[in-house]
Length: 415
Length: 87
Ligand SMILES: Cc1cc2nc3c(=O)[nH]c(=O)nc-3n(C[C@H](O)[C@H](O)[C@H](O)COP(=O)(O)OP(=O)(O)OC[C@H]3O[C@@H](n4cnc5c(N)ncnc54)[C@H](O)[C@@H]3O)c2cc1C
Ligand SMILES: [Zn+2]
Image 1 (tube, each protein chain N blue to C red):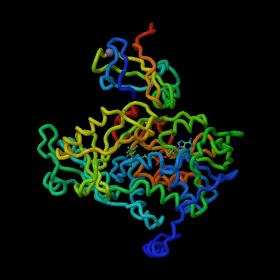
Image 2 (cartoon, rainbow over the protein chains, first blue to last red):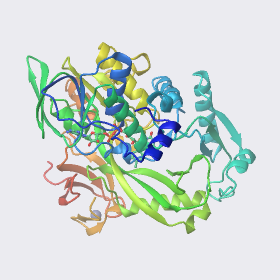
Image 3 (cartoon, rainbow over the protein chains, first blue to last red):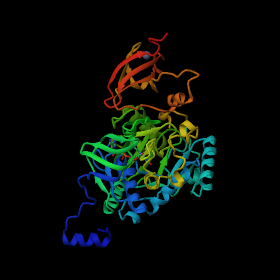
Image 4 (cartoon, helix red, strand yellow):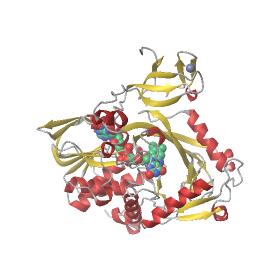
């Protein structure tokens, strides 16, 4: 069924219960492509395989329920304000796909280009952001530098004269913003399913079997499934699934927390990030302030963090917006991040000719979901990288072609 | 992560006093092949389970420690001085 205002009206009048948005069939014995991981990237890959490349004999195997991983845990921010040539065109393609996504997959994902504002606290930071802004504009991405008064007009409640971290200005990307994360998973699942893809929840892949140097089948909690091609999109669990095929990755798994406050009246209509510590904030359409900070810093698969980090994030938040001191936090949760050694992702082939890898998204893979799906589908369908994802190679670490946006070196907990 | 790390020198201390560096990995020989060095610098087993890491008691005795713990349950199994057992 196509969703529209008319369909809402007709279903409302006839009182018909809505049909499930996607099918959940029993797994078949064999597929042309099996995708492991029913998060945003796995579902988007299935969608674009079917829609762009006509490959529909596809299964997405998800160990939990659809959307139970990071796609349902992130803070929903999208942006394409990247500095490096390896990253910038990829994230900008993603932004362009976000801009047409809801019409494309006929689902309301509440894409809201409310802008992303990164605060500047020092001359050095202004220089760095000018450089970033120039790099963005050279790549055709929108960027503007705001002075203090311009920032004051958008965000009057910031602590501009903070003794230690005064606010001197900001860089803004107006096309950045937020998207309802769950709806992204649901929209892609629905669009893929309608085109023939089998989405199979509660199906954990436990082993990858090979014969003569090719993947032949996967062992799962719902039986053995044969596949002509296998694609891994397991985010924080990439180390575990890659190890099933004998691959050790340049990735560590770390926990990242996020927080939401009680519902408030409209308070902030953009996304803002603190430049003197790790803190960022936006307001959901329900009114809750959604915010986050740094990863926990130690390897973890536990999907929970420590109180100390909650305190740290709260301190940074209050340093930026003193009024936050009276806001009550409603919930905190965590997801496990695939932190790569240079902070950039991997979309590549592997040493096995029919095994493909999508991993290393760190804490920034939500904004990448559409482009990641399209580029991964391209790689799987054509056995050649998509033009904008050519830099995301698995062997770049060995070759010395790192994509280190932050210039931090091989220390995942610093990215 | 557990809230307390039992430092062999200082006793149980809040984890915030410590700084984590990462996996305990045997250092390749200086003239080891480049593949071995590349693996040492970039590749990680990254297990869901037991793991040995270097933590620095930066807010305490400032000794480097080997912390053996579980990355899924956050339980800390043992903490020893990193110099222990070294020539
Ligand atoms: C708190 C938090 C805040 C974040 N904020 C942002 C943000 O504001 N902006 C942004 O761009 N990014 C953000 N991110 C990062 C973003 O959410 C991730 O990078 C992205 O969602 C990862 O891709 P995914 O959606 O495919 O991952 P997931 O949804 O995690 O999908 C991977 C799936 O694989 C499944 N799986 C794993 N192993 C197996 C197996 N053996 N068999 C079957 N299935 C398996 C998992 O159950 C999971 O559902 C944030 C992340 C967190 C945790
Ligand atoms: Zn000590």
